[in-house]
Amino acid sequence: MDLLFATGNPKKSEELKALLSLHDYNVLDLNDLHIDTEIEESGKTLHENANIKATFLCDYTQKTALAEDSGLEVDALFGEPGVYSARYAGIPKNDSLNTQKLLQNLQNIENRAAQFRTVIALVSQKGTFSFEGIIRGKIIDTPRGINGFGYDPVFVPDGYDQTFAELSSDIKNKISHRANAVQKLITFLTINKHLL
Figure 1: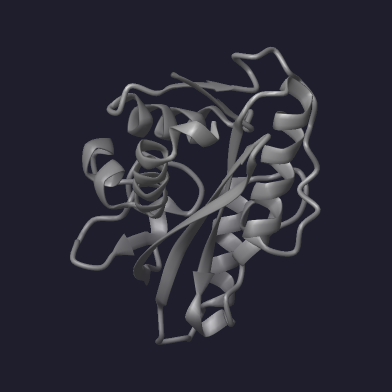
Figure 2: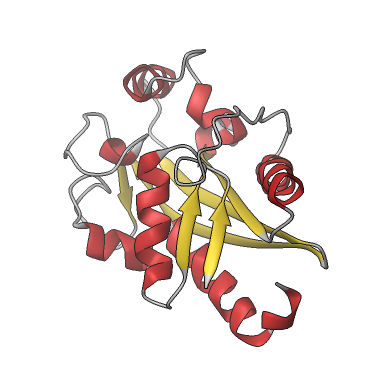
């Protein structure tokens, strides 16, 4: 079954395709659909942004669509960068500059506890549904690893010694915030296929 995914980010798309292909879902993103519209993420929360993107694609295609928004929430920074994670250091989006700003803001702060949070919105003609996934961890001082994207090189998930950027995609796709949210989505879809 095809699922339309409101993203043009190939790395996010790759992760979601890998997770959902295990359950016989074929994910088509904005690039696959040849839609080059930039969807403005004007929401003040992850839920709002996910809903904005999924609603746009559902309205555009008249088909069920999903979208996700993710953020890194650092305890000592009162949840920053949160919904602004992708543009923390400004526009245009730049992973390296975002990470630099984060590490600068955490200088001389001992509490490095943080979490990644993902919200997935599924929008169909029959309603809007949300699924949330969280993984706790800590921020380290020096980026490590070449896998992943965003803040992955400085985030070490609880129970591991490696950053998300050092872990294999197989492990990350089992434990990540996105994987947790996708698992809830899959459970929902299995029970509620009539809503698609």
